[in-house]
Image (cartoon, rainbow, N blue to C red; front, side, top):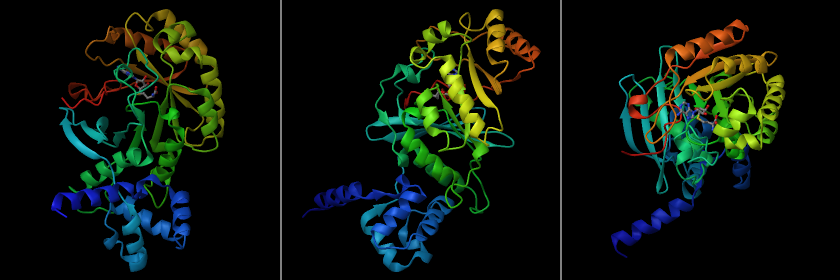
Length: 365
Ligand code: SAH
């Protein structure tokens, strides 16, 4: 057999191996049991993977030679490949990550007191919000757990290489599931991924530091209530159903009331949200940014426990939308404040490298 043939066989074998990055602790325990091992080994293995970024079973010195051997034969620890890296003048970094023959994007946003990683949940997005670049590309597939978790794992590993004290250094402090895709359409993989992010032997994030942004798939919000407790943000973007129907077509199925109602139930049971939902509102010139819209929004949310985050719209080639003027955003903000609502304006980051909200299309150029 020549060299090339040999390589193909190993590759195929590797492809068929079980990827440990697909498993949260419950799944890993079940797997270990199935190969005749003690379930407590799951804690040790997870610590090696997520706290030391170790992908070499030989280095997992406390799990015993026998288990090392079994894992080597039938499993792997494999995150997707990084194809390219782009740096913004404001410090934001965007990575283009390869998933089969397609690409997704992951964005790192460093600030003084926190370092946020914005991760993708799908390749493309089937929701097709009119003002979002991701909605304009073809929807390909839901990401696997290893492809969601792999984004955080790979980039943490990369950033940690620059720091000697790997145990103490936390390269990423916050996760926002706000990249490509609608996470609640990939609900099972998102639940497993969040379990890994929260696990004490896993990535050890606090539930207050993980934000999941959703367009508001009401039945899915109901489904995750009781299952995962993280900060939930809803992309409301309109003060009434007429405007929302126009910019977010799925509003015809899950309208504002049904979104807010399921959100309310989620918030009641969640401790991560501290009693307040996050409402996202993208500022689109002449569409949803008029004075009357601000009053309407304030009345809609007057009795709803929430924080409102106004998002200046980020442009992308070919879009007919425009961002509201600075003065309009300020006026809108002040009207909401007059109603005693908690409101902030999101700082735009990374727009020079097309890394801001709604600009992600997995483009390598
Ligand atoms: N599917 C999720 C995540 C989308 S991206 C959701 O709908 O929430 C995160 C946020 O960016 C959402 O609120 C989304 O509506 C918003 N967004 C999309 N395109 C945008 C753009 N061009 N400028 C600013 N925000 C945008």
